[in-house]
Length: 415
Ligand code: C2E
Ligand code: MN
Ligand code: MN
Image 1 (tube, rainbow, N blue to C red):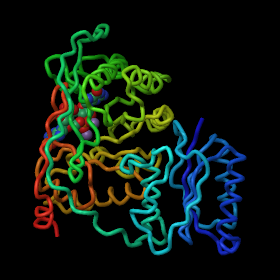
Image 2 (image 1 turned 90 degrees about the horizontal axis):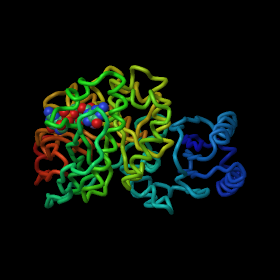
Image 3 (image 1 turned 135 degrees about the horizontal axis):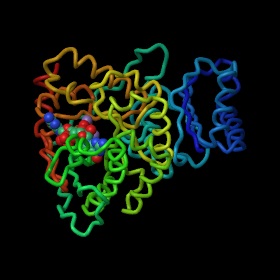
């Protein structure tokens, strides 16, 4: 199995005296021989290294690095299975002194896989490292405020509603449909992904629909219904990322579930890399061991993962100890009236800080008011979902309401 590991370390004086170039050349030779690709970034003091390759080779090398007295303060940032390599060979980069900032290096990958920084945890972790987030002790200055939001733009006309006529019916279950709700980046005037929300034949909500089934049926159907979700996406003109919800039980019962899901998606021309699988915080904590294994299988199959309703359950940030998703979706209970609640503000700021360092993209869900959006934007959130922007639409990507004059709102309401 292909594995990726990211760590940070501090270069001991002996290591630096050896010469960075020589050091990098040696590391490159060693890694090539082990079938390991990746990247070494040095800011003159700290190193960040990405290692990817056969699991045993990567883990053995990491153990050796930890034991090597020339590396001090080794901190493991990420270690998990991946579907494919992000680096073709071995790269070495020295960050220009005094220029640690968001714009360097602008492009890291030949394959282009690191270009969409918002979706790519590796690029985001490197970015965070270059901003000084991973220096000791904590409290390094962060980059200045991001550029102001773009002016409102016209809505993106995307989906075309179609009926489900002609689709093969699923055995012994009513045909279901999916409502679509976009996750937007308002400062770019763009849709970052579309979430598919289960609906019964009469428009029933997901809970009501799932309740009608026995436990076992619920899991098999939840997985099988995703075929309809992919088919529906394939019928629209939408080519961006797609988020689906899945009960972890659907994965746990079937050891081939992740593979099956990947095959389903591909049969509709959708690569797993385009699909974000959302699992709620509540469900993630009831059977942790099996859950982590299933998530690893999803990642190995190439899917992106998200923790849904973050902050609504009982695990909170400790959930990230054993599993780091690509995305965290902040629950709407935390979002509601955030401009008026110091407690919710404190919690959300902690989540944002943690996720930035780990390269996890944050989405705020359930935005209903402009004030909620304005506060969250000022705090650093860039992805939003909620009735304020668009209500879910049955079998279509709805039109989006792009907020205008955000800057004034931010200035007026958030000091
Ligand atoms: P979720 O994944 O957190 O999806 C967002 C839910 O919040 C949706 O409810 C959506 O309609 C609602 N929502 C979005 N924006 C706002 C807002 O601004 N204010 C308020 N009050 N609500 C908003 P929905 O469609 O009823 O779905 C409920 C839950 O059912 C979903 O929550 C998800 O956990 C689950 N679900 C949806 N589709 C599936 C599925 O295919 N399989 C499984 N297992 N669960 C699903
Ligand atoms: Mn969801
Ligand atoms: Mn949610």
